[in-house]
Amino acid sequence: MNEMDEYLDDFDGFEEEDDGAAPSGQYEHFHFVADKGQSLIRVDKYLADRMPAGSSRNRIQQAAEAGCILVNDVPVKSNYRIKPLDVVSIVMNYPRRELEIQPENIPLNIVYEDADLLVINKSAGLVVHPGHGNYTGTMLNALAYYLRDEPAYDPTDPRLGLVHRIDKDTSGLLVVAKKPEAKSNLSLQFFNKTTQRSYHALVWGIISEDEGRIEGHLGRDPRNRLLMKVFPDGEQGKPAVTHYKAIERLGYVTLAECNLETGRTHQIRAHMKFIGHTIFNDYRYGGGEILKGNAFAKYRQFVHNCFAACPRQALHAKTLGFRHPASGREMFFDAPLPSDMEELIGKWRNYVNSNMQG
Image (cartoon, rainbow, N blue to C red; front, side, top):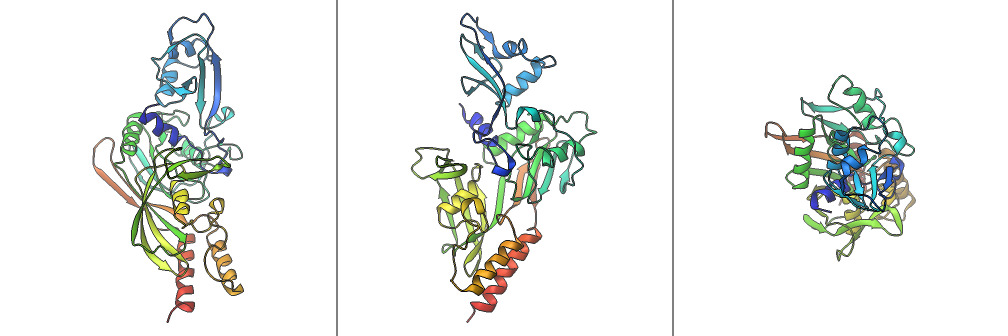
């Protein structure tokens, strides 16, 4: 697997258990085993002869370019030559019965749009992609409706659409490609780490240093496949680097800025837990419990009120910068903190002013 294939594989990773992605992050749609006497033949021709009617060779080639065709569990390009007993699979990041993404009139907060792309400020709670338990009401259903009059936009075409992701209960900025050339260009920018992405997070504990760097391979936790785990020695997982800065220290929590050097699944959530600063109310990683503070009942009630004010992980994709795929112009977007995080931070400021001054 080459580096770009690794990028595509990571992009196809799961988001949340509620989003319904399988632990492997991929769902097999078609499966074939080459005969013992199979002659050498290109995989796109092999599949074109075996796929259901209406599956054009061009679409099969598109799937190969998107890393969706596997031979013996390894992604291949359309010019790969099938050998006897090769196992060929077509995989996607949603179940087979969800091949057709139905348009739904779901409001989207679009902060920028042109002929090539959209930038969306996603609200917390909005699932990005259909999956088990969430076959409707997702961002892709909303995009299918919003772009229903665009003749070139096909929500099932892997060459179009989301260039990167954020988790269901994370809010903030995403870029969507409306043309294949735009997605290829933007994907390469993400892969080459030339984009600018910063998140704001409220985390448990006081971060003592003003800034720092977290480096540690990320992979599935072998004891819980719904979590990502840091492997500091690099014996498993993929390289991941997060830079962080302390913005404001608030008693028993810190408002931090996190900048991504890489973009792995749950990267900020897993990395911040690894250094002892789990994101506030990130229940999956343990942040939905009182991790810092005192034992007084009044304090416990205060924290539970904070959980109620922001009933999800306190993480927001605040800024996004990239070069426009067509013009090359520098683009930069900043999404203000949503109201639930503003209320949460306000509660901690008031707590500090009332209980920890002097």
